[in-house]
Amino acid sequence: MAAGIGFLLIGAAVIALSLSLRGRTRGRFRSWPAASGVVTDQEDSPGTLTSDETRLQIMHYSYSVNGVGYSGTLQMVIGKTMGENVRKQTFLNAYPVGKPVEVHYDPKDPNRSLIEPGSESGTFLTLVGAGLALVGLVAILTHR
Image 1 (cartoon, rainbow, N blue to C red):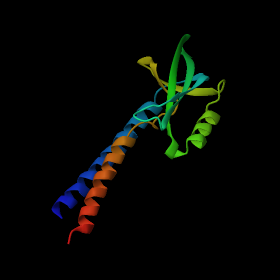
Image 2 (image 1 turned 180 degrees about the vertical axis):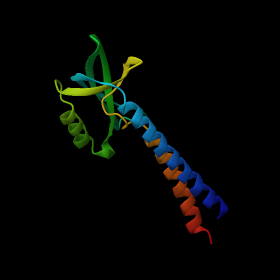
Image 3 (image 1 turned 30 degrees about the horizontal axis):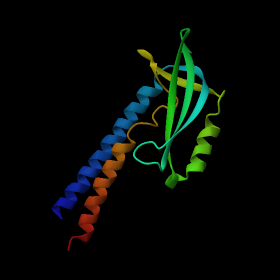
């Protein structure tokens, strides 16, 4: 039972940490200046990660800062178990080639940029915390 409580508490602490980090990261990226950009290409890469069951949808964009041109990418992992066709079409519809986009860039290094500030940070750590908390909860509930 004590181990279950320990896992539950550690899981809750990891979740709290991830949410705190996510908030700070989101705030920092949102404070980056924005530039006008445009979607330049869409790319579909089969067999990403460890399985042929996943695909990587990649959107390329370009933008300029103080007259200097830069480019970046936004990537989305799409798996067959995640509704591959629906997710792919949603991504393609959101970022068609030629669409104007707002690009947030690092004022210290304009090569670093984001299209969706805050969406990329903290998810993995939150899942780890939830997993630990779930293990703890199961251990507590099954302890007799």
